Image (spheres, rainbow, N blue to C red):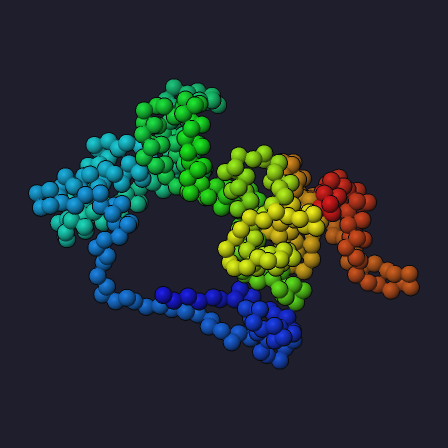
Length: 387
Protein backbone atom coordinates (compact mmCIF):
# COMPACT_ATOMS: atom_id res chain seq x y z
CA UNK A 1 0.00 0.00 0.00
CA UNK A 2 1.31 3.43 -0.97
CA UNK A 3 0.09 6.78 0.32
CA UNK A 4 1.17 10.30 -0.55
CA UNK A 5 0.00 13.80 0.37
CA UNK A 6 0.37 16.75 -1.98
CA UNK A 7 0.26 20.27 -0.49
CA UNK A 8 -2.34 22.36 -2.33
CA UNK A 9 -0.64 25.72 -1.85
CA UNK A 10 2.77 27.22 -2.52
CA UNK A 11 2.51 29.81 0.23
CA UNK A 12 3.61 29.42 3.81
CA UNK A 13 4.18 31.74 6.76
CA UNK A 14 7.58 33.35 7.10
CA UNK A 15 8.18 31.83 10.52
CA UNK A 16 6.87 28.37 9.71
CA UNK A 17 10.19 26.78 10.68
CA UNK A 18 9.28 27.42 14.31
CA UNK A 19 6.47 24.89 14.03
CA UNK A 20 7.36 22.99 10.90
CA UNK A 21 5.92 19.79 12.30
CA UNK A 22 2.47 21.43 12.24
CA UNK A 23 2.73 22.55 8.60
CA UNK A 24 2.42 20.73 5.33
CA UNK A 25 5.02 23.07 3.75
CA UNK A 26 8.33 24.57 4.85
CA UNK A 27 10.11 27.90 4.34
CA UNK A 28 13.25 26.86 2.49
CA UNK A 29 13.94 29.66 0.01
CA UNK A 30 15.19 33.22 0.36
CA UNK A 31 11.89 34.90 -0.58
CA UNK A 32 9.86 35.76 2.55
CA UNK A 33 6.52 34.05 2.71
CA UNK A 34 7.07 31.62 -0.15
CA UNK A 35 7.69 27.93 0.11
CA UNK A 36 9.90 25.90 -2.17
CA UNK A 37 8.78 22.34 -1.80
CA UNK A 38 11.13 19.81 -0.23
CA UNK A 39 8.39 17.28 -1.07
CA UNK A 40 7.42 14.78 -3.69
CA UNK A 41 5.86 16.74 -6.55
CA UNK A 42 4.48 13.86 -8.57
CA UNK A 43 3.99 10.17 -8.05
CA UNK A 44 3.47 7.50 -10.67
CA UNK A 45 2.76 3.87 -9.93
CA UNK A 46 3.19 1.26 -12.64
CA UNK A 47 1.95 -2.28 -12.45
CA UNK A 48 1.15 -4.84 -11.38
CA UNK A 49 2.16 -6.47 -14.65
CA UNK A 50 0.63 -9.70 -15.93
CA UNK A 51 -1.42 -9.98 -12.75
CA UNK A 52 -3.97 -12.75 -12.67
CA UNK A 53 -7.55 -11.48 -12.18
CA UNK A 54 -9.17 -12.05 -8.83
CA UNK A 55 -11.20 -15.23 -8.88
CA UNK A 56 -13.27 -14.40 -5.84
CA UNK A 57 -14.19 -11.13 -4.18
CA UNK A 58 -17.35 -9.55 -2.73
CA UNK A 59 -17.93 -7.52 -5.89
CA UNK A 60 -17.53 -10.55 -8.16
CA UNK A 61 -19.95 -12.52 -6.02
CA UNK A 62 -22.52 -9.76 -6.47
CA UNK A 63 -22.10 -9.99 -10.24
CA UNK A 64 -21.80 -13.75 -10.62
CA UNK A 65 -24.95 -14.84 -8.81
CA UNK A 66 -24.39 -18.31 -10.27
CA UNK A 67 -21.55 -20.37 -11.73
CA UNK A 68 -22.09 -22.90 -14.54
CA UNK A 69 -21.23 -26.46 -13.57
CA UNK A 70 -20.61 -27.36 -17.22
CA UNK A 71 -20.60 -25.81 -20.68
CA UNK A 72 -24.22 -26.83 -21.13
CA UNK A 73 -25.21 -24.69 -18.13
CA UNK A 74 -23.45 -21.53 -19.28
CA UNK A 75 -26.27 -19.95 -21.28
CA UNK A 76 -28.84 -20.35 -18.49
CA UNK A 77 -26.41 -19.03 -15.88
CA UNK A 78 -25.44 -16.11 -18.12
CA UNK A 79 -29.10 -15.20 -18.57
CA UNK A 80 -29.59 -15.23 -14.79
CA UNK A 81 -26.53 -13.04 -14.22
CA UNK A 82 -27.55 -10.59 -16.93
CA UNK A 83 -31.18 -10.43 -15.78
CA UNK A 84 -30.08 -9.63 -12.23
CA UNK A 85 -27.65 -6.93 -13.35
CA UNK A 86 -30.04 -5.36 -15.85
CA UNK A 87 -32.87 -5.20 -13.31
CA UNK A 88 -30.66 -3.23 -10.94
CA UNK A 89 -29.18 -1.06 -13.70
CA UNK A 90 -32.46 -0.19 -15.42
CA UNK A 91 -34.33 -0.02 -12.11
CA UNK A 92 -37.28 -2.04 -13.33
CA UNK A 93 -38.07 -5.68 -14.17
CA UNK A 94 -36.51 -6.32 -17.57
CA UNK A 95 -38.29 -7.80 -20.58
CA UNK A 96 -37.13 -10.81 -22.58
CA UNK A 97 -36.15 -8.48 -25.42
CA UNK A 98 -33.92 -6.42 -23.12
CA UNK A 99 -32.25 -9.55 -21.77
CA UNK A 100 -31.78 -11.02 -25.24
CA UNK A 101 -30.10 -7.84 -26.45
CA UNK A 102 -27.50 -8.24 -23.70
CA UNK A 103 -27.23 -11.98 -24.31
CA UNK A 104 -26.13 -11.24 -27.87
CA UNK A 105 -23.16 -9.37 -26.46
CA UNK A 106 -22.51 -12.24 -24.06
CA UNK A 107 -22.39 -14.67 -26.98
CA UNK A 108 -19.95 -12.43 -28.83
CA UNK A 109 -17.61 -12.29 -25.84
CA UNK A 110 -18.01 -16.00 -25.17
CA UNK A 111 -16.93 -16.91 -28.70
CA UNK A 112 -13.67 -15.02 -28.28
CA UNK A 113 -12.97 -16.19 -24.75
CA UNK A 114 -14.65 -17.96 -21.86
CA UNK A 115 -17.74 -17.56 -19.72
CA UNK A 116 -16.27 -14.64 -17.77
CA UNK A 117 -15.30 -12.88 -21.00
CA UNK A 118 -18.88 -13.18 -22.22
CA UNK A 119 -20.24 -11.66 -19.02
CA UNK A 120 -17.63 -8.91 -19.28
CA UNK A 121 -18.81 -8.03 -22.80
CA UNK A 122 -22.46 -7.94 -21.72
CA UNK A 123 -21.57 -5.83 -18.69
CA UNK A 124 -19.65 -3.36 -20.87
CA UNK A 125 -22.75 -2.95 -23.05
CA UNK A 126 -24.92 -2.53 -19.97
CA UNK A 127 -22.69 0.19 -18.55
CA UNK A 128 -23.03 2.18 -21.79
CA UNK A 129 -26.82 2.00 -21.87
CA UNK A 130 -28.61 5.38 -21.58
CA UNK A 131 -31.14 3.80 -19.22
CA UNK A 132 -28.32 3.27 -16.72
CA UNK A 133 -26.57 6.59 -17.27
CA UNK A 134 -29.75 8.69 -17.17
CA UNK A 135 -32.89 8.57 -15.08
CA UNK A 136 -35.50 8.46 -17.81
CA UNK A 137 -39.11 9.29 -16.94
CA UNK A 138 -41.66 8.61 -19.68
CA UNK A 139 -44.61 10.96 -20.01
CA UNK A 140 -47.93 9.09 -20.35
CA UNK A 141 -49.37 9.16 -23.85
CA UNK A 142 -52.71 10.73 -22.86
CA UNK A 143 -51.25 13.68 -20.95
CA UNK A 144 -51.97 17.14 -22.36
CA UNK A 145 -49.44 19.96 -22.48
CA UNK A 146 -48.76 21.51 -19.04
CA UNK A 147 -51.01 18.93 -17.37
CA UNK A 148 -49.88 17.51 -14.03
CA UNK A 149 -49.64 13.75 -13.77
CA UNK A 150 -48.44 11.17 -11.27
CA UNK A 151 -45.15 9.49 -12.09
CA UNK A 152 -45.06 5.71 -12.06
CA UNK A 153 -44.14 3.73 -8.98
CA UNK A 154 -40.87 2.62 -10.58
CA UNK A 155 -39.97 6.22 -11.39
CA UNK A 156 -40.82 7.18 -7.82
CA UNK A 157 -38.57 4.40 -6.54
CA UNK A 158 -35.67 5.80 -8.56
CA UNK A 159 -36.27 9.35 -7.37
CA UNK A 160 -36.45 8.18 -3.78
CA UNK A 161 -33.36 6.02 -3.95
CA UNK A 162 -31.15 8.55 -5.71
CA UNK A 163 -32.25 11.27 -3.32
CA UNK A 164 -31.75 9.34 -0.08
CA UNK A 165 -28.96 6.94 -1.09
CA UNK A 166 -27.42 8.46 -4.22
CA UNK A 167 -27.62 5.03 -5.83
CA UNK A 168 -30.06 2.64 -7.48
CA UNK A 169 -33.10 1.21 -5.65
CA UNK A 170 -32.62 -2.05 -3.81
CA UNK A 171 -34.59 -5.22 -4.51
CA UNK A 172 -37.27 -4.47 -1.88
CA UNK A 173 -38.02 -1.06 -3.35
CA UNK A 174 -38.14 -2.36 -6.92
CA UNK A 175 -40.43 -5.22 -5.87
CA UNK A 176 -42.92 -2.88 -4.19
CA UNK A 177 -42.83 -0.47 -7.12
CA UNK A 178 -43.36 -3.31 -9.60
CA UNK A 179 -46.48 -4.31 -7.67
CA UNK A 180 -47.81 -0.73 -7.73
CA UNK A 181 -47.74 -0.46 -3.93
CA UNK A 182 -45.32 2.43 -3.53
CA UNK A 183 -47.96 5.08 -4.22
CA UNK A 184 -49.75 4.02 -1.02
CA UNK A 185 -48.82 6.77 1.52
CA UNK A 186 -48.41 4.27 4.37
CA UNK A 187 -46.13 2.03 2.30
CA UNK A 188 -44.16 5.03 1.08
CA UNK A 189 -43.60 6.30 4.62
CA UNK A 190 -42.42 2.89 5.81
CA UNK A 191 -39.96 2.70 2.93
CA UNK A 192 -38.62 6.19 3.58
CA UNK A 193 -38.05 5.38 7.25
CA UNK A 194 -36.41 2.07 6.33
CA UNK A 195 -34.10 3.79 3.89
CA UNK A 196 -33.15 6.52 6.34
CA UNK A 197 -32.13 3.87 8.87
CA UNK A 198 -29.85 2.28 6.28
CA UNK A 199 -26.14 3.28 6.35
CA UNK A 200 -26.47 4.33 2.71
CA UNK A 201 -28.59 7.27 3.86
CA UNK A 202 -25.34 9.01 4.80
CA UNK A 203 -25.27 10.02 1.13
CA UNK A 204 -28.12 12.43 1.90
CA UNK A 205 -25.82 14.42 4.16
CA UNK A 206 -22.81 14.17 1.88
CA UNK A 207 -24.53 15.02 -1.41
CA UNK A 208 -27.77 16.85 -0.65
CA UNK A 209 -26.44 18.85 2.30
CA UNK A 210 -23.10 19.19 0.52
CA UNK A 211 -24.83 20.97 -2.34
CA UNK A 212 -27.43 22.93 -0.35
CA UNK A 213 -24.99 24.17 2.30
CA UNK A 214 -22.07 24.51 -0.12
CA UNK A 215 -19.92 22.07 1.84
CA UNK A 216 -18.34 21.15 -1.47
CA UNK A 217 -16.89 24.63 -1.49
CA UNK A 218 -14.58 23.60 1.34
CA UNK A 219 -12.47 21.72 -1.19
CA UNK A 220 -11.58 24.91 -3.04
CA UNK A 221 -11.37 27.61 -0.37
CA UNK A 222 -7.87 28.89 0.28
CA UNK A 223 -7.38 31.12 3.33
CA UNK A 224 -4.10 32.96 2.93
CA UNK A 225 -1.38 31.13 4.89
CA UNK A 226 0.27 34.47 5.65
CA UNK A 227 -2.88 35.46 7.55
CA UNK A 228 -4.14 32.05 8.73
CA UNK A 229 -1.01 29.89 9.13
CA UNK A 230 -2.77 27.17 11.12
CA UNK A 231 -5.38 26.37 8.47
CA UNK A 232 -4.53 23.00 6.94
CA UNK A 233 -6.18 20.14 5.08
CA UNK A 234 -7.04 18.11 8.22
CA UNK A 235 -8.93 21.14 9.53
CA UNK A 236 -10.59 21.67 6.16
CA UNK A 237 -11.84 18.07 6.07
CA UNK A 238 -12.92 18.17 9.72
CA UNK A 239 -15.00 21.30 9.20
CA UNK A 240 -16.88 19.70 6.33
CA UNK A 241 -17.38 16.42 8.16
CA UNK A 242 -18.74 18.22 11.23
CA UNK A 243 -21.67 19.67 9.28
CA UNK A 244 -22.34 16.39 7.48
CA UNK A 245 -22.64 14.61 10.82
CA UNK A 246 -24.83 17.36 12.27
CA UNK A 247 -27.20 17.19 9.29
CA UNK A 248 -27.23 13.39 9.46
CA UNK A 249 -28.13 13.45 13.16
CA UNK A 250 -31.03 15.85 12.56
CA UNK A 251 -32.46 13.54 9.90
CA UNK A 252 -31.88 10.20 11.65
CA UNK A 253 -33.20 11.43 15.00
CA UNK A 254 -36.22 13.04 13.30
CA UNK A 255 -35.48 16.34 15.00
CA UNK A 256 -37.05 19.68 14.21
CA UNK A 257 -35.46 21.18 11.10
CA UNK A 258 -34.88 24.41 13.05
CA UNK A 259 -32.36 22.47 15.14
CA UNK A 260 -30.02 22.93 12.19
CA UNK A 261 -29.78 26.55 13.32
CA UNK A 262 -29.91 26.08 17.09
CA UNK A 263 -28.41 22.67 17.93
CA UNK A 264 -26.45 22.84 21.18
CA UNK A 265 -24.19 19.95 20.21
CA UNK A 266 -21.73 19.22 17.45
CA UNK A 267 -19.25 16.61 16.22
CA UNK A 268 -15.50 17.11 16.51
CA UNK A 269 -12.23 15.26 16.30
CA UNK A 270 -8.99 16.36 17.89
CA UNK A 271 -8.02 18.75 15.09
CA UNK A 272 -11.36 20.56 15.04
CA UNK A 273 -11.68 20.55 18.83
CA UNK A 274 -8.30 22.25 19.10
CA UNK A 275 -9.47 24.90 16.63
CA UNK A 276 -12.69 25.51 18.62
CA UNK A 277 -10.95 25.41 21.98
CA UNK A 278 -12.73 22.28 23.19
CA UNK A 279 -10.46 20.37 25.61
CA UNK A 280 -9.87 16.66 26.17
CA UNK A 281 -10.67 15.48 22.64
CA UNK A 282 -8.03 13.17 21.20
CA UNK A 283 -7.69 11.19 18.01
CA UNK A 284 -9.04 11.46 14.48
CA UNK A 285 -12.43 9.87 15.23
CA UNK A 286 -15.41 12.22 15.46
CA UNK A 287 -17.56 12.21 18.57
CA UNK A 288 -20.65 14.09 19.64
CA UNK A 289 -20.10 16.79 22.25
CA UNK A 290 -22.45 19.21 23.96
CA UNK A 291 -21.53 22.86 23.57
CA UNK A 292 -20.94 24.67 26.85
CA UNK A 293 -22.32 28.22 27.31
CA UNK A 294 -18.89 29.57 26.46
CA UNK A 295 -19.24 28.05 22.99
CA UNK A 296 -22.71 29.34 22.18
CA UNK A 297 -21.25 30.99 19.08
CA UNK A 298 -20.71 27.49 17.64
CA UNK A 299 -24.37 26.47 17.88
CA UNK A 300 -26.12 25.47 14.67
CA UNK A 301 -24.96 25.80 11.10
CA UNK A 302 -24.07 29.47 11.30
CA UNK A 303 -21.47 28.88 13.99
CA UNK A 304 -19.68 26.10 12.16
CA UNK A 305 -16.23 26.54 10.69
CA UNK A 306 -17.37 25.30 7.29
CA UNK A 307 -19.99 28.06 6.94
CA UNK A 308 -17.66 30.75 8.23
CA UNK A 309 -14.85 29.63 5.91
CA UNK A 310 -16.81 29.24 2.67
CA UNK A 311 -18.45 32.65 3.14
CA UNK A 312 -15.15 34.45 3.70
CA UNK A 313 -12.52 35.95 1.45
CA UNK A 314 -9.03 34.42 1.52
CA UNK A 315 -7.75 37.21 3.75
CA UNK A 316 -10.83 38.33 5.73
CA UNK A 317 -14.45 37.73 6.59
CA UNK A 318 -17.17 38.90 4.20
CA UNK A 319 -20.45 40.11 5.73
CA UNK A 320 -21.90 40.59 2.24
CA UNK A 321 -21.20 37.01 1.20
CA UNK A 322 -22.58 35.66 4.48
CA UNK A 323 -25.70 37.78 4.28
CA UNK A 324 -26.38 36.70 0.71
CA UNK A 325 -25.75 33.03 1.61
CA UNK A 326 -28.27 33.15 4.46
CA UNK A 327 -30.87 34.91 2.34
CA UNK A 328 -30.44 32.40 -0.49
CA UNK A 329 -29.89 29.11 1.34
CA UNK A 330 -31.83 29.58 4.58
CA UNK A 331 -34.50 32.22 3.93
CA UNK A 332 -35.13 31.28 0.28
CA UNK A 333 -35.14 34.90 -0.93
CA UNK A 334 -32.12 35.39 -3.16
CA UNK A 335 -31.23 39.04 -3.70
CA UNK A 336 -31.05 40.15 -7.34
CA UNK A 337 -27.74 40.37 -9.12
CA UNK A 338 -26.16 43.84 -9.05
CA UNK A 339 -26.85 46.01 -12.10
CA UNK A 340 -24.07 45.71 -14.69
CA UNK A 341 -23.32 49.45 -14.69
CA UNK A 342 -22.76 49.94 -10.95
CA UNK A 343 -19.42 51.72 -10.44
CA UNK A 344 -16.98 50.31 -7.87
CA UNK A 345 -16.63 51.71 -4.39
CA UNK A 346 -14.12 54.48 -3.85
CA UNK A 347 -10.65 52.90 -3.81
CA UNK A 348 -9.24 55.64 -1.56
CA UNK A 349 -10.50 57.94 1.16
CA UNK A 350 -8.90 60.89 2.92
CA UNK A 351 -8.13 61.15 6.60
CA UNK A 352 -8.36 64.32 8.72
CA UNK A 353 -4.97 65.47 7.44
CA UNK A 354 -6.02 65.01 3.83
CA UNK A 355 -3.87 61.94 3.27
CA UNK A 356 -5.23 59.26 0.94
CA UNK A 357 -5.65 55.83 2.46
CA UNK A 358 -7.52 52.59 1.94
CA UNK A 359 -11.07 52.73 3.32
CA UNK A 360 -11.77 50.44 6.24
CA UNK A 361 -14.22 47.58 5.91
CA UNK A 362 -16.70 49.54 8.01
CA UNK A 363 -16.45 52.49 5.61
CA UNK A 364 -17.00 50.22 2.63
CA UNK A 365 -20.05 48.68 4.24
CA UNK A 366 -21.38 52.16 5.03
CA UNK A 367 -21.06 53.09 1.36
CA UNK A 368 -23.27 50.10 0.53
CA UNK A 369 -26.06 51.51 2.66
CA UNK A 370 -25.93 55.12 1.48
CA UNK A 371 -25.41 54.75 -2.25
CA UNK A 372 -28.71 54.66 -4.12
CA UNK A 373 -27.49 51.94 -6.49
CA UNK A 374 -26.48 49.66 -3.59
CA UNK A 375 -28.86 50.29 -0.72
CA UNK A 376 -31.82 48.26 -1.99
CA UNK A 377 -30.01 44.92 -1.62
CA UNK A 378 -27.28 45.72 0.88
CA UNK A 379 -29.70 47.15 3.42
CA UNK A 380 -31.00 43.57 3.70
CA UNK A 381 -27.84 41.52 3.21
CA UNK A 382 -25.28 43.42 5.21
CA UNK A 383 -27.03 43.44 8.63
CA UNK A 384 -27.61 39.69 8.33
CA UNK A 385 -23.96 39.15 7.49
CA UNK A 386 -22.79 41.30 10.41
CA UNK A 387 -25.07 39.41 12.79
